Length: 498
Image (cartoon, rainbow, N blue to C red; front, side, top):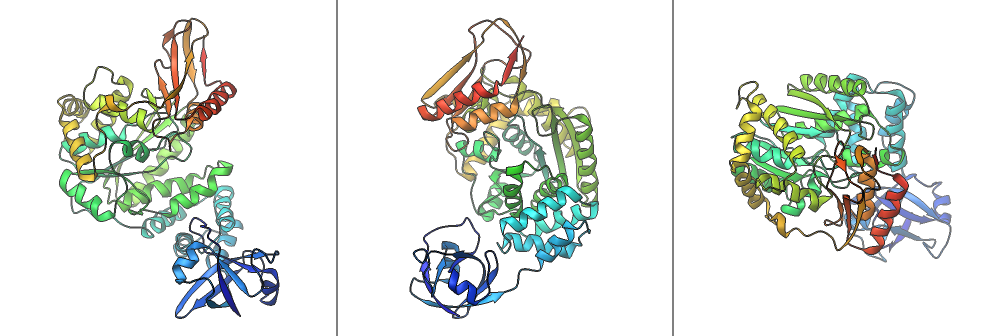
């Protein structure tokens, strides 16, 4: 069937979607989410079809192309294209098998991930796959296959150096921005650490969001390599141009609405990203607490065991630590406020956050021992010396220069204009702060997109407070967002004083 191109002037976020009028769809026996093959000259693209009843949207004889298809086909409005029915991708058969509880082979899982990255399967089809792995579980071999498939569908950062250090935190703790402290300590000690990080999904800031206040984090993989060759390290966003294990973000996108906790997929995602940067030594941090991602010690031990099994399979030396996730770490929650905490610690400022410093030094010490730079039990001492001597700050500045330095003076990092101070209603001791609630309050204030927004703490769990003392301040770049944040705080009641 020949149809005339209509430019819909709409982006789908990557999906290849075409819109046909109901009459044309009936002639080809097509239903919504069926596949069609669109041919223009020598170019052929398989797309998902949507069906329009209204002739105003797409008239009979027209085919509405969304921007991704316009770009790939190099099509112009008014041009003719040939349209044919197309079969669904082979991965749909594998997804059905998983729904029936049948274990998938590496080839089947690789096909699913390939089709996912190439936008050949829809969100609803991906949701079935995620739901199947959630309800039916994943065997160890399936996790290994998923890890390999996710790693191989993106770019790879290959390093000739040994060891290559890396770390990952399961997350869920407000603040807790240890990576920008650990990386320069490890690099200053002479070890290689090409650190890629994510942006925020549910938190107030991802590590990449915080680092972006201080330096560029988006770049081609070639520039990432240059930074590592020059400084021993980098701190970049793993998405975008670098494109490491890109299937991960797509899977998270469909997990998020139902808060699905698919352990097998989470393990595969983390390990795929570490393998994609050639990591040989890996530290995993699992914070546990009522409002952290991992709620109890039993689940933390289960995840620890699985990480160790996977790391052994891929010959990665691993250390998994279980840490306190019952309260925020650091003073700032939000990109700029967290960046300010980091710089104050690196500069040995009197305003530094000592709990954040202590955790970063503990973790850096373990990594220095793993990498052979410090004897057992002496790693934290070495890390402390590197930090407090100023070596870590000098290395941090080198990394920032190599990536594209922005602002490195914490005193020039001014908070957002609008603010609200939460004050203690009585004398007492803070016995609880809910991490999830704090992250939510910060997001309502504008995080992570509004870099200056967030929550800044003056006290934490265990501290005594007097009536009317400030416990934390909410900052926002607009009065309306501050009001939303205040209303969310009133609803969630994020802390308790006794």
